[in-house]
Amino acid sequence: MNSESRQGGPTFVADAMLGRLAKTLRMLGYDAAYAAHAPDEEIRLAALRDGRVILTRDREIAATRLPVRVVLVEGDRVADQLRFVARELGLSPDPAGFFSRCLRCNVPVTEAHADEMGGLVPPYVLATQSRFARCPSCGRVYWAATHVARARAWLRSVLGERGGGAGVATRRKNVLVTGRPGVGKTTLIRAVASRLGVRAMGFVTREIREGGERVGFLIEDLDGSASGVLARVDLESPYRVGRYGVNRDDLERVGVPAVERAVAGARLVVMDEIGRMELCSERFQRAVLTALDSPVAVLATVQDRSNAFLDAIRARDDIVLLRVTEATRDAVRDEAVRALRVLLARDGAGPDGSPGA
Image (tube, rainbow, N blue to C red; front, side, top):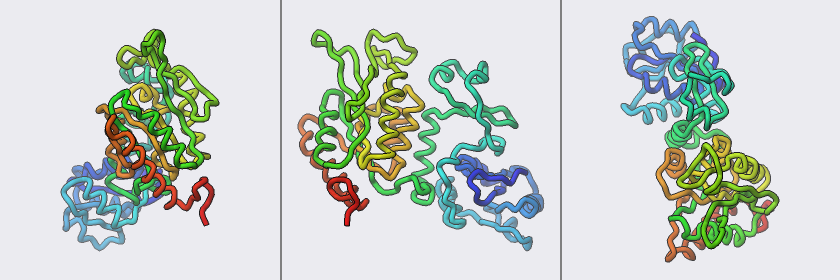
């Protein structure tokens, strides 16, 4: 058994009753062997030989005199079991190590190139993903699709501060505004950012209209330094949302760097919007998660639709979700301003974004 762990913390061997817990620990990057059919004595010896922590629900396995660490796991649900183990062992997994091991074989995965994936993944995956990982043992291929974002959100919600590491905010520091199209979300967040008077960076989108008809959308850096076509009705593209062809190149040329620069140098990250068009890019999804996980406050609009990635964002425990209508625009604007002022003050920033006294 390989005792190396990407997380640099303990390694584990789980008994037959804790298979789902072992898989969840692998998601976090921990080396977690699963002894599904091993006799009790073999589990104890494996722990002694490889320096593993025994995870068990069996009191007979736990009653060993060998010099090994044993956690008698409480809870029937895997979420409760994970919390219990994290509390008992003081685990603080680093998000950078998430999904670095094969969930089936428990060995570290290796980076794989897209041109090696022919016949191994569906064609639509090759068309929408650029980064892959592969298990050197069983050959299973992994990629960061929306199910990974959903799993990351679940892991954070289960572990809270322990599971977040230094880069994940466990308090509410991200303000998201949602509502139907055309209700004025972009105008609202521009007004909020202006009222706060702090250094705000990021991107916004706006309509392209020709002959009084909406034919597409532009994406622009908040300071106007870069812009591009996000989508048009007449744009030929493999990525389509409704009648619009999506320009992933301009999204990644303008939107992704705008978010990255905001995380690195702003007091407030502005993203307008996080929606189906923008989610055609894996790079954009990673940038969104980086911003939400960062210590920097976020003000964003999020599309009012059900989607695995969007649902995972809305399920986070570090967001304030505000729904805007024509009748509530002013009230929602004022509420967003109040919420962000509290967050910025709590971070010790003066009204101009400089450190407070």
